[in-house]
Image 1 (cartoon, rainbow, N blue to C red):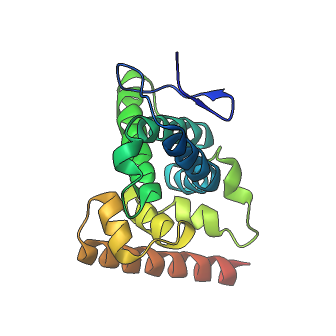
Image 2 (image 1 turned 60 degrees about the vertical axis):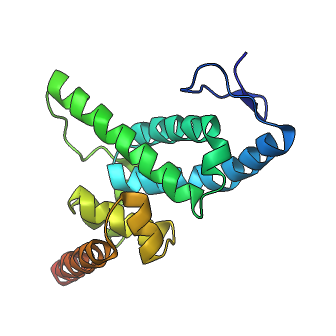
Length: 179
């Protein structure tokens, strides 16, 4: 029997099925309710693919459930879930890209979400800068938490953040003068 969260079957990547105590299951359920949508939005902005972001969150949350005794003890379990989801999506994308022709990135529905084009400008940044900006601004992680979640040094996080924000400022100011 598969584990359940609020009546929803949660697939796990471990074998045999994970058996959490009621208190542990309740802790995971509370974590899921608070963080699933936040991590999804962060991954959707980072990946520029809503469906891929949803699948990545589902996979990462399933893995978090399977390892909840460890993940639940981390200082930042949401950062762990974000990183696992990002890694899973990156692996999926590499495999998919080898198997199919490239698809344009203009179909992301969030691209037009802001009149000033902030999300569109963010989507134009390289993935490493987008991931850092997403963690620092959308997930509101500290520099240390972002570094831990993305497996980077704090200096790398700071430089990617500075370069990414500088590129956004240039892009958005260019957009304003063109209007």
